[in-house]
Length: 307
Picture 1 (cartoon, rainbow, N blue to C red):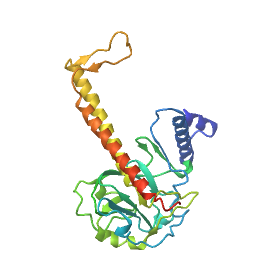
Picture 2 (tube, helix red, strand yellow; picture 1 turned 90 degrees about the horizontal axis):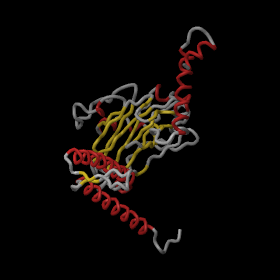
Picture 3 (cartoon, helix red, strand yellow; picture 1 turned 45 degrees about the vertical axis):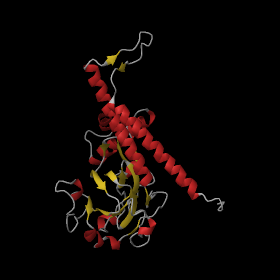
Picture 4 (cartoon, one colour; picture 1 turned 120 degrees about the vertical axis):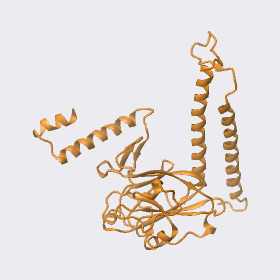
């Protein structure tokens, strides 16, 4: 309807530019509507963070490996991200955003690199591309304007990983450690071997934080966030399992209806729900982890150092 009104107001035919404007207006309206509604899917908006190398130069220190003494190489992993220089990447206005477990950390600018220290476990890496006219709008919920990569990878303690991003060419060799059907062995973002990475990453520079268009949240350790996200993911899975168990118990007749004086109650099962036991165990693990964090922070604040 918006397109029809636009056509009548201008001409009898729509041009590519007018159709793009209408699309932008529609998406903008959707973003504004979602921002006013509760329960709306996540809005991915990289405002002040989406600039490419053309707008925000990559001029940090030349690449060097982070010493093992600067991260916990016994318990965690070091993950490097880099993008080889090309005419395309250096003239780019909007750079793609890198997400780990649906948290945005940085834009992958051309000729740049950065790193994240991660906890062991299954991590999800996602790449989203913004639209400059919308100041970094990248999508809503599962809908993305451009999501070239969305895959999981296993992080092992003590290992070093290298992610290579390029829309121009592929790595010189495929990572032999990846399964043949791995999504990280094809596409723009690939998990490459150290041998391949060394050929290119040494020519990159650190992507630094540069407001107002180049804000980033890297390099840094995201171990605590990884662990919290793992707890949240496990809880979500257990809650889904619990709902399935309750439906099975209802179907089998192991269900006590709510008393008449509680008309809005849902009733309760007459047999033990296994997911409840797992949820209680998870709650204890979370509480123990939070206590260990609090104790660690307390130890870091030495009584003899008032600052």
